Length: 182
Image (cartoon, rainbow, N blue to C red; front, side):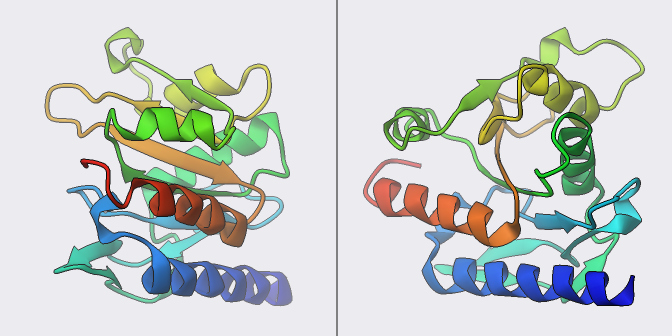
């Protein structure tokens, strides 16, 4: 088990290094960004590693605030654990800034995209549990987004089998939107 946890941390460190080195910092949302990677049998946020304190924009730089740790992100952990209920191979996710200008680029990159509307959220459920599940009924898409709600920042979530794949997909998008308005 310890060996599997170390593999998760190592792979996540590799993904974070790629983002730090090459991602356009304008893709980081106001609330910060995180990327998570779950153990194969993840059941709770403590089974999902992420960046403590999130990844923030520091000037024009992508800056992880803390180290990689299990239980570091409740938000990203819920996305991953929900997606894993539909496809256990999808063990990683990250959140990035939403912009209408990004949506056509997601299509151009041939990503499978799904969205949900927070206004339709049933009472008494967690948004990420409900929103992600509503998009995964016929398979887990590459991207899930929402346009936000009162007090909730709109967000794009990129999902994949491992964090390096997620980071590479974010970088593909980052390369395309460098000159787009964010």
